[in-house]
Amino acid sequence: MRLRFPSWVLAFAIVFLYAPLAILSFYSFNAASGDAWTGFSLRWYRELFGNSPDLWRSFGNTVLIALGAGAFATLLGTAGAIGMRWTRSRLRKLIEGLSFLPMVTPEIIIGVSLLLLFAGLGVPLSLFTVFLAHVTFCLPFTWLIVTARLQEFDASVLEAARDLGANEWQTLVRVILPIARPGILSAFLMAVTLSMEDFVITFFVSGPGSSTLAVHVYGMMRLGVTPVINALSVLLLAGTVVLAYFTRRMVANLGRNG
Image (cartoon, rainbow, N blue to C red; front, top):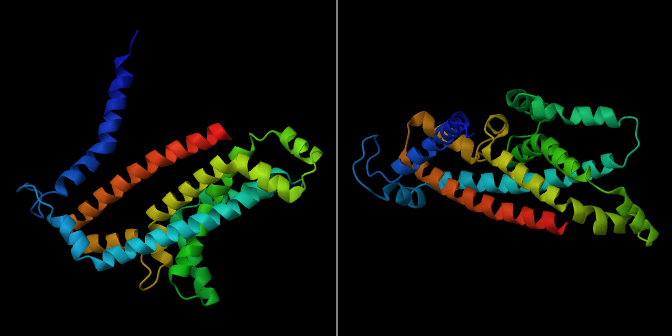
């Protein structure tokens, strides 16, 4: 017997999630800046590419911070996950518990805490402080994702590598990292996504000239809604869809090969 209620709930959820995106995309091609449709136009896309240097500067900051913080957080998270996977320290449970704390702590608390830390150390707010802040809140997520991948690790593979004469470095490079590669890639993409969409923490730790796209768009919205943001959102959405498609295929291929 086929139940209709779950189908209706699924349809409502899909409409609820994607209807705002459809409306945003629709009005990005509106010739006027108001809610009334006055005709199809690429006016706001031309405005975006021709007369929005500050917007593109903040977008460049966002990409730079996201890639840098994502790579560094993934490196630290991978090293921590590998170390904790085979450590016998009595502090293991304590460290594992503390690693989840930044994930459940409200972002405003993390932002204020980092701001006070930088102020106390006399560190001027800049892209560097934004980078450090993003590494801080991305690190627990990367550690968790890589740890989940390593939990499926077959310990007999390590024993086989040692029997064949591999030292610790060779075992790490040729055995552990290739097996953990899908998790490492997923952790990096998760960190990049978290970094690009973060607003609260970035708002507290960014200084003059170091605003990311989220902070810059917030400043624009305070002065009034402009359809240029609609055009930018459509481009970011299209780029996200393309990136998600190829990433899904890449992770699937790595999983099969691993």
